[in-house]
Image (cartoon, helix red, strand yellow):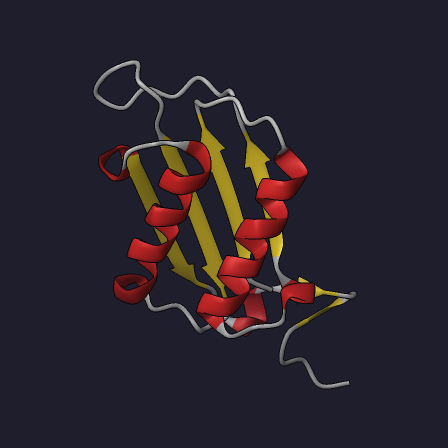
Length: 113
């Protein structure tokens, strides 16, 4: 149930590889199974951040397990290494979602059968 949405003005050649690699990273940072991580990529998007150079916005949502102060650096480094976007051109939004507001497999997490 961690979800990561990557929006970037850069053009990504191997989208599937990037999505798989960032899923593994988010899985390890949240200590949640990779099989529950959903990743989305919007590349080649019209995004402006101070100038026309490439930039990136990431949204990370999870039921608990978020530690933004410890996660920001490895995620930023990943984007820099894999996409080439400087760390000062990356924004990351973290959102801890209540289990009652997140559903999978037809029911919310924490809902009793």
